[in-house]
Length: 276
Image 1 (spheres, rainbow, N blue to C red):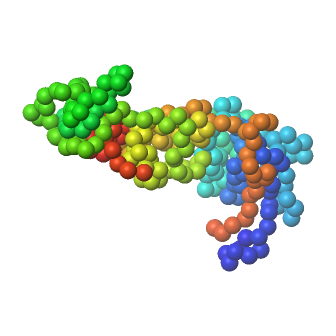
Image 2: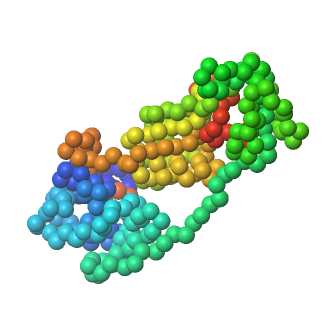
Image 3: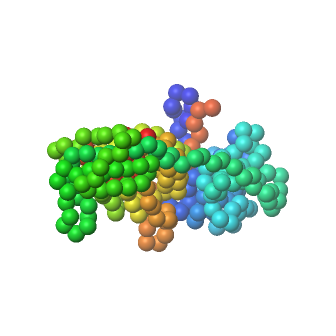
């Protein structure tokens, strides 16, 4: 479309729901895309008609770029190379010879896990231990670092920060066995502060299992929570679901278009803001 939002035209269209993530090179010479979780590239020419994009085309030479999938497909600004990532590695392929495979560049980034220090004592609450029907009225829970060291009618250490839990119930954190609480999209980082995560913690959920995640939000949730960059339940996810004959994307086509240059209670586990 033009700068005023008019003259909208479809330049390329995916042939099926398993073909998506269409990326046109800046010089408009090549079109990279994902098909069945692998990246491919085909030459692109402006003909005035929609180009049907598929890895099974016989009209254009189609070059497969990946063997193990990837994400974050992007072109260099000059259009002479295409880039993507797989785990901690960055891959690049030059447009001159698609058969020439270059060694990926590792991204060596490590961040210390966010382990709280000091001692916290939750005092005066009704403590549910999950040992049968054992319940302590006006009990105490002592946490040192990220470990629960004492539960019940126990002494409060002298160096402990005391939190009065009178009138509250202290219990092990709940596990949500099917929760979708991460915002964002398949590509890119999710917001650092998310209402759904705070709501889950407020209702006592300290571990969240997502049985239908996408790669990047799943990786981001796990690693940023472990590093203390985000607040939320401990994430646990399965492998990402893939489109198949049984489960397919709701959108029937992907297109490439021209466009301008929850009541608070005290809980154990999870990310505890008071234990930072």
